Length: 267
Image (cartoon, helix red, strand yellow):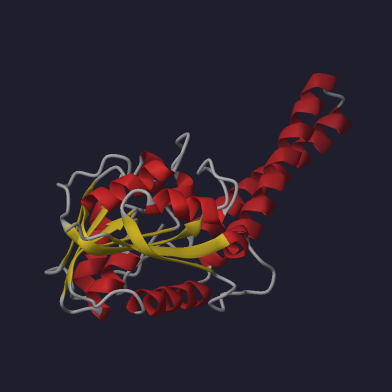
């Protein structure tokens, strides 16, 4: 995958490649099944080819339908603009910021650009799978340098379930499209870590889908669970409510939302 060395690369093309690879594999398997049928191969070989082809083709189409917006730079910019707008409504732009699941640093870098009185740390595990697609710590650092915020925007390895920071280090914690990727019995554990590393009075804003994985029956119950961790001024806005609607709804746009709150100051 060749990148333009003069422009930041934030990984828009990844989902196109994955969808194309899955669908292409499906087409090849089906073509082999047809060929093997003509050549008179055994039934079990034909069944395997047809089944594999159908599975890959279906997954390729589903991947495209559910994540196509993530491959569109213009739509990603709309999401980023919306995120910036929601963030300005709850945060004064001053202090140390943590971006969980930073990837190639798009959100962390944008915060650094939009809020000159902030210092941002982006954390990620940068797993082997994503490194194959160019999602690396070095890539995030390179982007920060190109965007001229490397003095205030740094990156390090970190697990969202066990963040490598002391209690109360940050005035703001953000995360976009990361929490749904973390497979644990109850994802409220992620919010416990968010609240732990926030300074009293600090804010968080998480952009994700919150309808499953939290062992609650509805959003109201989720907000109550988070409030019991020592959080106040909770706000929940769906993507649709803030105007993010790209026609044929993808999974993330259909179910996504902004969830924000403030850590209570103890007297």
